[in-house]
Image (cartoon, rainbow, N blue to C red; front, side):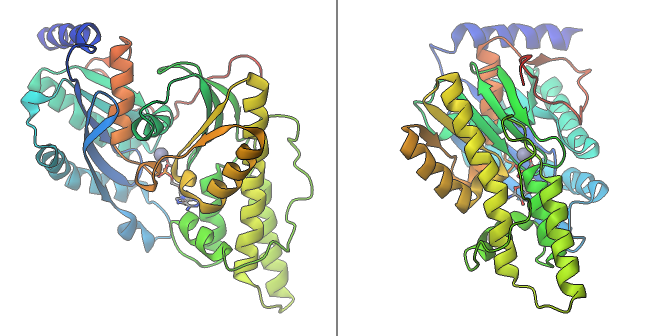
Length: 361
Ligand code: KG4
Ligand code: ZN
């Protein structure tokens, strides 16, 4: 097909010319409830990063409704692309390639971004680069820390994922540990819901926890101690059971104390394992990414613990922690300069892609 032949040639040119000229990538993200489009120069410089959030729409349902998310992506995407180009002060003629999240996420939501990206790539005869959303989160650190180069330990904590990875190079991650059940962000959202605090739960629980004390122990032992895996389902259920029992007994629940105690346990697990992995693999840096990287308690406790161990810890700015297209464009750039990730027009959404283990868990 003519389109793919041209796209392939242009893709090869990126790989050949990136050290001699600027490369502009247009990134598209629609895996959950944010429609986002960004223009990123040379993988690290954000020219624009427009995020159209649906949080207000989903709030009244207490969480993201997949069908509603897809419909709103359809309504938003055209304008978000236009705004991203305008803000970056570029036109589609200036763009070298389109990068799009093709998974993991909600299938209907992903399909909107993927379909739009394919149409744009075909109409402009531009290479299409497929980006794994989970890996994309880590690229937020390349944007914020211009000097950051792999290898390092990555901790990806979001509403859908909890993963400890060895970032081997710009395109390859090896999974060291992951959640055996719920993601940490999912647990935050659920706990907020049962406390009647609203959606999304992470930022509210984070804020409430500052007013409370760590005076309740929900989970006695980390059943996965000694491994690099995490479990949040037990902790979540323990909080739900605690609330149920207290309410049944007619006791008044101190919401701030519940938030603080839950948060200490949830974050505590991450800190110990990330540091242990960094020491075991002999690296000197831990980079954190994903929505939960915005958590203030994680930021302070991991920073303090890393200082003691002489480990450098990096967090993206708040705006790049939660879903955004700048990280997708950046990830797309690093794929392209490595000659990886080129997709043709048969690309489809893959809601369940994950990271791969190295063989040792
Ligand atoms: O990365 P993200 O935007 O979407 C996914 O890829 O899942 O992460 C969203 C998650 C939600 O679960 C939200 O509650 C959580 O990140 N989150 C936080 C904070 N801000 C967002 N969790 C804890 N503390 C926060 N400050
Ligand atoms: Zn995400």
